[in-house]
Each structure stands twice: as C-alpha cells, then as structure tokens.
Length: 287
Image (cartoon, rainbow, N blue to C red):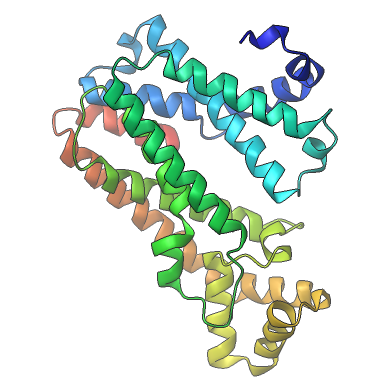
C-alpha cells in the first residue's frame, strides 16, 4: 500500500501533516520515546543510533497518530477530525498503513505475535473505556486496575518493539510510566475550559477524587454530582468542575503522577542497570 498514492490519505494530508508536526514539537514524542528505549536497551547514547533506528521511530510516531485518529472516531468529540473527508475510511487506511510499516521492520515472528497480542488488549480496553462512566461507587482502585489499561497496553506494545534486548519485567515500567502520563492527560482535560472527560462523565481520577471530597464534606455539591452523573442534568457542569479544581483533587493527582514517574524510573534502572546515564537523559527529556 503506497501512502502517497491513496486517495483518502491525500485528501486529508494537510490535517495529517499538522498533527504530525504538532506531535514532534510537543513535550512528548512517541518516536523519541522509542529511540530512547532502543538506546537504553543497548547501553549506548541516543546519538549513536543509525538511520534505520530513526526511520523505525518515525513509523511508530505515525502509528500512534493513527491510534489517536481511532480515539477521535470512537469519541466523536474532535470537530477538526469530524470535518475530514470520510474520516472512517481515512482512519482505517491510515492504521492499516502504519501497522504494516511497523510489521515490515520486526525481525521475528515472536516479536510480531507479542506486539499483536498487546495491541489487541489495548483495543479491548479502549472499547471498555468508552462505557467507563462515573458511578457513585467509582473508586481510585478501579482507575488503577482497569481505567488506565488502554494506555498501559499501548505503551507496553511500543516498549516490546523498541527495547532491542528483552527484559521480563518491562511491564512494570510500562504500567507506571503510562499511569503517570495518563494522569497528566486527565488533569489537563479537567483544567481545560472544554473539560470533555467531565462532559462525557468519564471516571478519571480527578473526577473520582472530586466525588470523594463532595461525599465526605460537601452534601450540596454531592447532590450536584448525583444530578449530573446519575440523572444526566448537565446544567451542573460548571459547579462540579470548579469544585473538583478547588477540592485538592488536582494536587493529589499531580502527586500520584509524580510518584508513578519515579517508580517507572526505578523499574527501568532495575531492568537496565548499566544504562543509568541514558536513562537520566530520557527522564530529563520528558521532565
């Protein structure tokens, strides 16, 4: 399949380029993440990697953008994406292209099978996440045992194909690193004016902690939560969002995110004890 000869890709190429450059200019790039994992597993500096490694990293960046398109397709909350020419076909073909380009670079059947298996777990978790609405029984434990599964398995899939020397305990690193990043995303969402997670009544940790604070000390706000999340009265959106931001939930989630990041650092050092200097460079990059 030729990327630049496909009609659906060409019709939406300006959108794709904009997303691509924004990703590369952002605070975190999956391509760079892959490069660092490659270097860490080889105990070498990132500058010592060859063109083949950079080409592979670019393919990973493209694949992650394709998964973002799938998110937008399933959520339906991105106006720019919704305005594309046939976004369904575009997403299907872009995912197909980016996956094939990665599979072509994998050197063993076992690696391909592990990558495929983990991606399927991520997709299954994503389907469940769409239905993951906040209830009055939602808990922090629920968030960390199932609410972040999509992010954990997607990251673990990329780790498996980026680390050239395999280690059995890289899942622990993947879990804590993904948890830290997911919390950052959830915080950015709840702080933003749109607050799409809150509009969709998703059970993210900031919302769960806000619910706990209201239940234990703010009966009036707790009734707002009931009306909003149980009876779908969206008129309470601003009240609930302001309460979450003022309740200490934001600061708590920031603390937990930082703790998860520290634990991911410890796990990565345990897996690759001879690569401490490269690991330090990696965490400096993402800080």
